[in-house]
Image 1 (cartoon, rainbow, N blue to C red):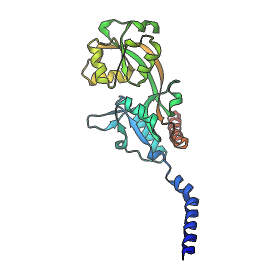
Image 2 (image 1 turned 135 degrees about the vertical axis):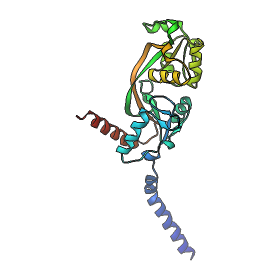
Image 3 (image 1 turned 90 degrees about the horizontal axis):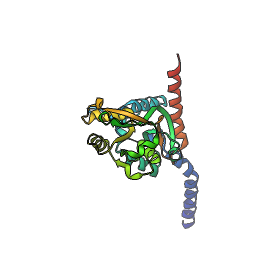
Image 4 (image 1 turned 180 degrees about the vertical axis):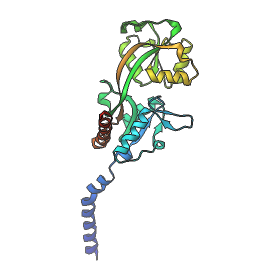
Length: 249
């Protein structure tokens, strides 16, 4: 009996080894298993008055999932401050963060699917300040604010030698307030989002203006580097198909 038991154990061992690749493959992450992160960044991704996630990037992602034969429940998308999500996606696998401006500096940090739409990163100022900026070297004379890990702040850090002139904050209410109180001269942020946040926080957008363009680029869905490329390709194929249909007469 002991010999029989030994034979059974050995046989089971071989079976487990034989089936391990199959088990691993069947449990591999797929597009519907991806952890999706975003932030409040209107008009691309934001919560409406009822607390529902809306926006250009959200609607486009829903269409892309549908095109890929999947259903995306926006309630599964986690909304949190940009700095936290930006750090999280670099530490984890099978994660997506949107909407992210694709830049040469960020290129090696993530995998990408898109584009979603064009974007313009600008410096916002109070009209009453009469600030005129014609070239980047003029920025040294101003105190400039931005969101931690946001493209606006990253661009300013690359342009300003005097880092003491840079003010960072984790959320937009702090920066709109500082701009209003003249604690910063300029706010580096996506142009459309800045206007909508100023309005949301109770400021008259007619009293503010874009005085300098830092960058014109495109927004993408960014994935953690450890995400299987096949997952990203599936989303990219769906995005390409949608864009091809949009171009068709």
